[in-house]
Image (tube, rainbow, N blue to C red; front, side, top):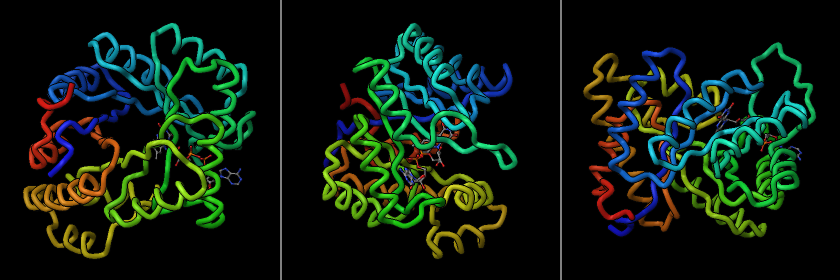
Length: 284
Ligand code: FAD
């Protein structure tokens, strides 16, 4: 297998309690041996986790690791985005994951940004090249897209607005990823599209998440997971095999990097990378 020095990045969400923050500190330490290129921290739509996101980003930076702040714009104003960009710049953040985000149902969208492409253009206009900007990509099509083609075009527009690279929604079908990348390149997208990988540790959580975000769980995986019931050891062993094989196909297909949705846990991400022999010693 190639790719021993393939860049790895890790995603966390902001903890809600001091105990959660302590636990996440331990998780990060367990994962830093992988020498991640950067660690990113999610951001609740409407700024609902802004304090926790920025605090976690600050903690990662203080541990000597590059940090990316996710940044969603739905419901935001130009003035609020400008102020948050200034805060992140002052903290020493150099990388953003620029998103539209989703508001909880019942909230009117409002705000001065409609799509992530509006945010990317605004960040570029306001801050030049101060930030490396990542955007989201959907190999299995965003759930609200009018059609596969408009979604692909929307992705290309986001990149043309000034994104440096993209991270995909998670998927378990590598063909969807490779087709998406080919189609995007045909539209002139020339930035790395990094696959986002969700380790499988729990059946109910995965099925719930996937229904909400439009990620497809192939029928054979769904049925096998359901058949394991509460047998978490079997779910984890099966999940490791499925995700390990997926990563192997992606690496063999020449992906530029891999991004892990860690779900603030270290064991599953470490197990996948150990299975692939990508434990960090070959990365600079
Ligand atoms: P957009 O790129 O704006 O696309 C949203 C929808 O609008 C798509 O259906 C697209 O086809 C359509 N569209 C875009 N432009 C146009 C146009 N010009 N005309 C017509 N239609 C258009 N959510 C969070 O709340 N916080 C996070 O931290 C977070 N992190 C994420 C990280 C990654 C890597 C990914 C893949 C997703 C993340 N999300 C996060 C989820 C994301 O916010 C949702 O999927 C959201 O619904 C779309 O955000 P977006 O930036 O992809 O939107």
